[in-house]
Length: 92
Length: 92
Image 1: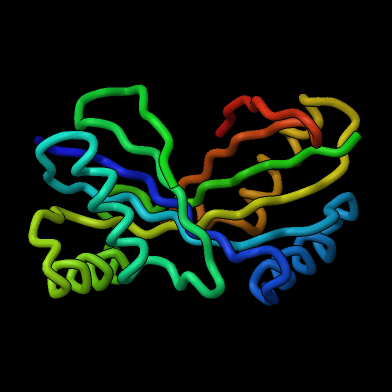
Image 2 (image 1 turned 135 degrees about the horizontal axis):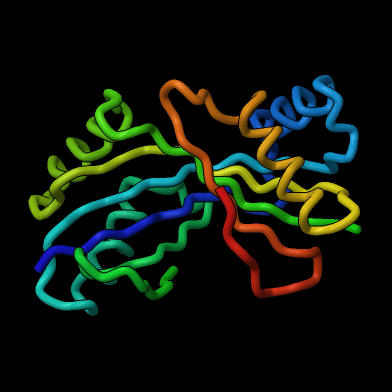
């Protein structure tokens, strides 16, 4: 069966985030003085096949560990739903 | 009052996504043959001040239009919550 996952990859707290700082500076220079901080991350939507939800979660955990996130600097969590469903569930 | 927004920036359907295609190819070459497709986007967490929820939504809409997303190629939506709250609400 087909699954859709939305994977959120974020930098761990304390890791330098020059992209986020640049975006924050850009917003302030446009007049958004009320911006405190911006953190930049990646958003990956993955469509894949798996037999059931446990297998889908296991595949995502493996994909994150082996390619999608650098575990030294980043964390990953995801929302998973069966293709066609609107409500999802959360993993990490 | 302080707000936390999680902004999701995605490519519009039909726009070429070489980053997503590269990630999909990388996953398949690692043995994840069950991957159909990957779409890559940006995940931005923004902490900022606004008087109320309507003002916060208006500020986010303006930030997305002026800097965070290219409206020709991208769409943006966000989840907004008051700092300290755990549940959020969705905008776009």
